Length: 107
Image 1 (cartoon, rainbow, N blue to C red):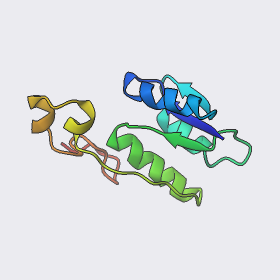
Image 2: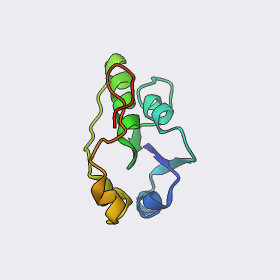
Image 3: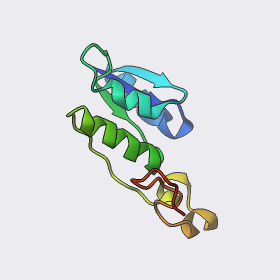
Image 4: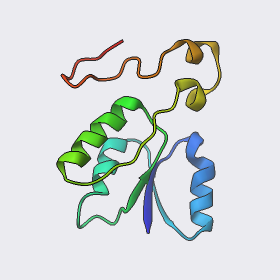
């Protein structure tokens, strides 16, 4: 099994855990939408994408994966749960600045 994961400090512990389980890890610096699409391509070696990322990227990935007749599981977390419990992160509502279905940015 090969898991693709964004090479960010927030994923360091998960990368170590996966490697300890002898899972092949493809850690990439950016491009989580492209990496999510790789999981749907028949000739790709990527089986799973794991990540904690932005809501806009998750929405775009979900739509492309839906069009490819594949499946995605995700969960929306409040910004302060991912980015830290600061005043700024608690003030910003979940999904602020996300892309709407018509392609315009909200928030």
